[in-house]
Amino acid sequence: MNKTKMTYFETDDILHFAISDEEEAGSVEISPNITAELNEKGELIGIEILGASSFIRDTILESVQANLLKLQKTA
Image 1: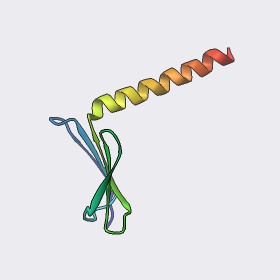
Image 2: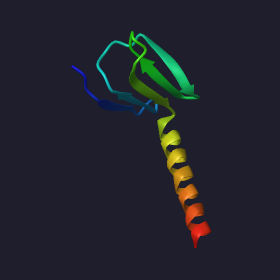
Image 3: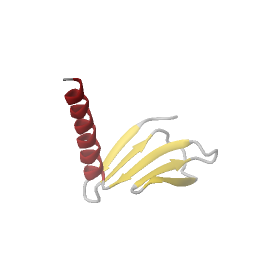
Image 4: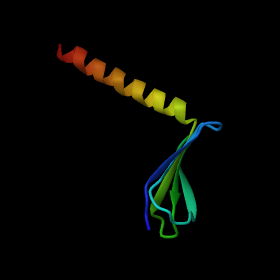
């Protein structure tokens, strides 16, 4: 049975998204601090984000800044 689950490990500041309950057979670093977890077939079964609070803050801040620049250009 497949299930989607998000877990935040506050002490370590790690956010884990599991999109399957399959066993992890390997992983690939997508970018610094972000790892894709794979099953035996090489299919994505989860994502782990280290330094999650900073990553999410910075990602949202970049998005907001980009949208503000777009608004300023169209005004």
